[in-house]
Length: 192
Picture 1 (cartoon, rainbow, N blue to C red):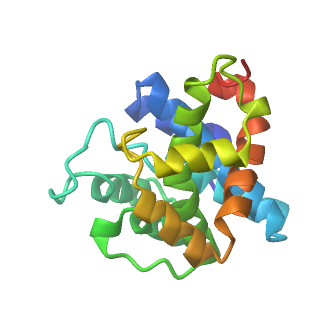
Picture 2: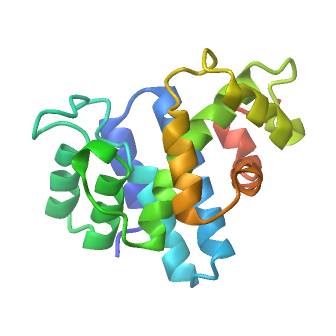
Picture 3: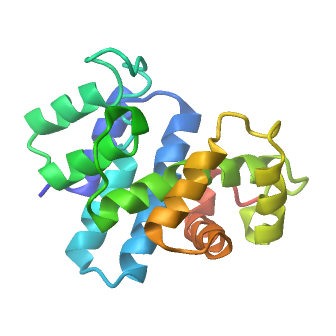
């Protein structure tokens, strides 16, 4: 099994954008939180975390989703060549609806559910005067969720679908991802 350090090095090799690296760290935190929540072993928590960390590692270099060498197809190829297991690669493929990859595992469903929501939460924090996730409330995120002009790149339909697939009420899901991100707020630049 690959280590987190190896996955982080791979992320930094392909991703130079600070915001994309922080997004990867946010999704990793959400994945680890849910892996613990669902009672996974310590080894599985690592697998889930690595999956979150690497889900978009190829996006910056290969952003064209319609090309067979675009995101996440190219990333899947790279991860396979590096010996990453199929469950990680399948979950990463499944986080992009356009790949038509079924999300058959709890890990794949969680990645899909955490990905878009973590982006909305980050955006909600960055418009706060204190820029701190520690004071962010679910109701604030829900208000931003309803405002279609806010963080337009965050797909609300996918957020709803993700929570439904995860079978977690949206309010609980928002709180869970906030809690996960609070644990790494310094790394994310969201500690205020």
